[in-house]
Length: 441
Image 1 (tube, rainbow, N blue to C red):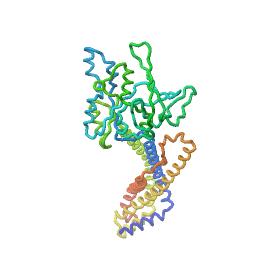
Image 2 (image 1 turned 90 degrees about the horizontal axis):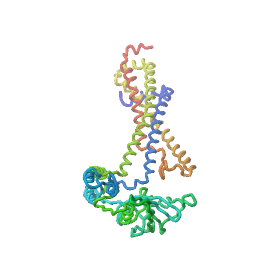
Image 3 (image 1 turned 120 degrees about the horizontal axis):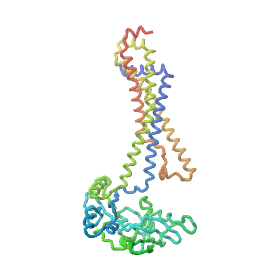
Image 4 (image 1 turned 120 degrees about the vertical axis):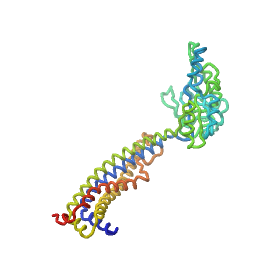
């Protein structure tokens, strides 16, 4: 049997039982549509979640911390023999020697120690606010790829550079509401600290005043941070601790390690962990999200695949009935010289065509449903005035997103399901005895 003869025979047989083929293919359509919509929903959620991670601005950045802050460990450490014994169990600290060791690791572009203020609030006029107060060296902002949107990046004594959202973090105590501040550039912000020392019955307070000389462009991670001179923050922490801090002994609370390339991040993290420190990066969050949504898409796709398996039973039933109706025809084909594999190919072709037809229609319908869902969800979010837009990520437009590989995969999968469903009926038809088939009524 030539390919042309096979194709004409398959098409003729399907055309003779159009009604039954349409009903059978409809089951494949439902299954393929379910696969398309559910997997697209999972892909859309993944894109939206990734879009909402505004803090992932630099995948080459690694955050390194020690088990405890240096001066807290030093203040809590006993003396004498107890100190000698306890030093063996003391957590490894981010001292200058440790930073030198980290700088020597392959792939490390920069090591930036951060001096974090350990207590206190921001105050602007009659309002108090919150932000992460960090002390850095003058060149650190450039090393962290932070861009100043307004003002300058100067960190001279008494000067401060703030993140883009710090202005939104102030609460007016007198009016009982948040302050609507257009800009803090050129304003004076106060940092209020309070310390408790064992030899003082009452806590003492202190205020430091800073002029805001620069506002950073929005980058996610630094939007709620303020940066001042590292030396000044260390002085503030020394006042809180009631003693001088020696970084060669006490170490830093936190260090940022900048990798030269994203591919180097994982190896650098592992090396830092082997040194006894905690190391994490935004790349970890990306990997975890991709793993989670990969599993979610597999689960959603499996739910749709169940519908395809049910449709496969319909194909088996349709072709099994066709064998009974075409028994004499099969006998005649064999009598005229058709071999067993020719008969098998006819039935397998019919089964594959049913799966292909259902797959193509299912992909088209699934694509249409996904597009309609995007329009409906976008309209609902527009009516909510952005109240829930954060769920889908800033600027997201494809809430149900169809990956480029999904339509061809769905069509091939549906065709394969049809082909496998036709194996049993094809074997039955191929093994029919031609003489008994010709006598069949």
